[in-house]
Image (tube, rainbow, N blue to C red; front, top):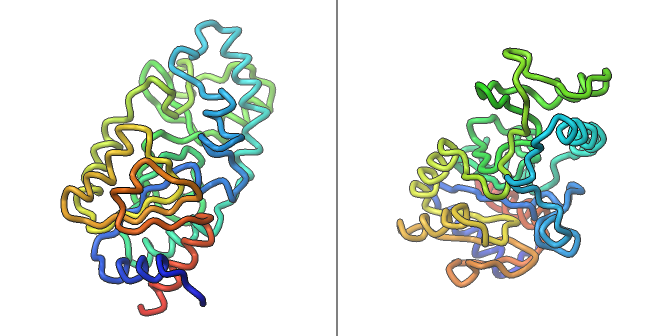
Length: 255
């Protein structure tokens, strides 16, 4: 296996680390067929970013949103984890890393074999919903089954309340419990590896800085420059899947 100098250095850091944390953004899922946020076809560039101000305020608007969700969900559900997700799973399940903090809502880390308690979803998940009155959580599959059965406005099976996506819209605060857990993991890590994030959205982008402030190391893997490249110990330019598979193989080769 031919390694670049940066990959060799990264493997050395990973072997020496005792508490690795991963931080992933949309760039890790582009190889699974999902758009990133800030690339040419990303939702930021094309203006397809839902905000808190766009929450449906009438029954008609909500029904229209459900119809669009019904059409979109099979595509989201069919996405499969790529080499990058699988490499992170191998490292965490092999005891080489603590957890993965993710900005993604696609559920691909769990689909790659990680349990929920090893995945900290800062922006929620597109695979679940919650009711507005009481916060009951309902699976995306349950909602999809009811939409395909002809329901136009599925309601919470527990209380009959209005459902909304269990994701964070622009303008909303991050879920307190997830953010607190992410901060604890970042503070405990002696090495954070950022994969596929431009690191411009706060407070999430502050997490690698927390690791550095506590004396930890930082590796950034991305196709394009990020906002924290100057802070990183190693920057690797490349596709997340290929690079992560290479690093995981190098680390686990010695195990």
